[in-house]
Amino acid sequence: MIVIMKHHATTQEIAAVVQHIEALGFKAHLSQGEERSIIGVIGDERPVEPEHFELLAGVERAVRILHPFKLASRDFHPEDSIVKINGISIGTSKVIVMAGPCSVESREQVMETAAAVKQAGGHILRGGAFKPRTSPYAFQGLGLKGLELLREAREEFDLPIITEVMSPQEVTLVAQYADILQIGARNMQNFALLHAIGEIQKPVMLKRGMMSTVEELLMAAEYVLSHGNSRVMLCERGIRTFETSTRNTFDINAIPVLKSLTHLPVIADPSHGTGKWELVTPIARAAVAAGADGVIVEVHCDPEHAMSDGAQSLKPDKFAAMMSSIRRVAEAVDRTV
Image 1 (cartoon, rainbow, N blue to C red):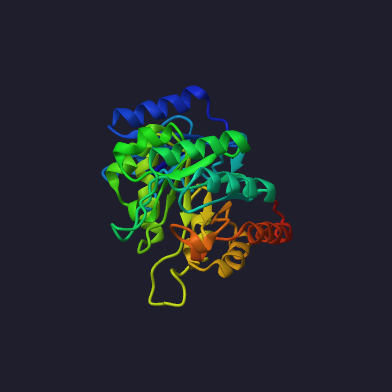
Image 2: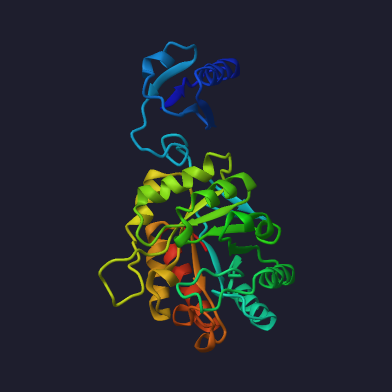
């Protein structure tokens, strides 16, 4: 349920409503916009009728929210949320590009790729230090050494870092190195990890599970938001369907759907969404046109010998061409890159 305050509601009236909500055993989430304030009632509010709150001073009306996700809902937070990282704002009319190797393999590889990302106009460096792999025999990442190499690249090229965290036990460690913590598709419903990420109060990008619905993605985000960590981004990275011509089926519909349902920034991952480097740029263009707040792609200087995901990685020249391409698309829809 949300309690919508009158346009001229006073600070004292808003505080009184918050206090009343908390006295009933609920949590109150205050969202103050330019014109009016909205107070979210967090908890099982079914026994309480909206009229109960409408009798309070300063209240215009109270409305039940039908969606099971509350804090992620646009009803609670009508305006777009903006996640700020080291001077970069994600969730504005500017499309933010995150790029880098699937896995950190060596210092030379990371530094060379970071230089290419920076030169082409990328904003954030991605790279995996801990890698969840289908096979236990596949390369699992360099771990701490990979985090140290990413930090070195960040300092050298002034690029914030996004990297994956796989377990609650690793959250504190990874947070010491990363600017954005990524929750991968396989861990979207790792609830212990979601709780830990929420408590760390660090920007997070939550990837949609390969067989998860949009609502399930938003409910996973709700776990993080419920701890007071509002710096959450969602990532559409393709879902598993009967189609075998691509690695996954990139759900372009999910971008405008999410933008209508939630105030959280939406990032597109055409690399995992297609699994083929030659399809990355077309899908990146489509994502920008559909309203994605950012794009995350894999870049590797020698993808033929990459230790993971070489087939979907762009070489630096192809990445530069992609950047040029999406700039033109962004301009066509009144946006920038």
